[in-house]
Length: 226
Image 1 (spheres, rainbow, N blue to C red):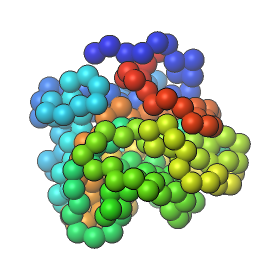
Image 2: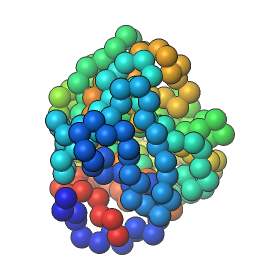
Image 3: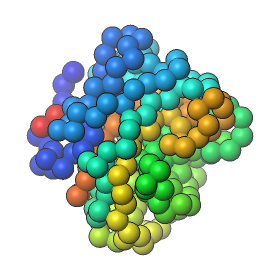
């Protein structure tokens, strides 16, 4: 798998998963300094059937108990600037409500950020307990780069490099976070509702840096490992 040039902010990367591996693997490798374990549950797995970059992605089906989730970790605390981002390809929905793609909250950090989508396949961003941004486009069956970044007290959301909605002011430090992929961090594991039916690739959390403060060209290569 080729990767892009060196990342000048790699020392601030607290989580980095390329979702590479053998077909049907249940191991997600963290290529950051944290070495975070994010176990999969149910039928969640690495698949070589679809990928944004490389040869594989994480496949979650929207079924009960199908997700990946770490334990809370101090490396994912967000005292100030941060960026959370990933690529997602949404297949469909199960039940009604909002379906979570990537949640960085934990029981001790419920004001933290998460990325989700609605029944109309519009990608949304939540921070400080409520949805703050909603894209107007239908994102079903297409790879989308999604990111939430905070610079100072200003939070922004981007879809494919374009800022969605207005700036949101939120300066509160966020406690220990955890990586949850495919569901809300506190969703009922046995309930198929609110769980993503799709694929996730190239997940990255940067602590101490807002990588995006205005519109940008979305990444054209996998995130660097150095």
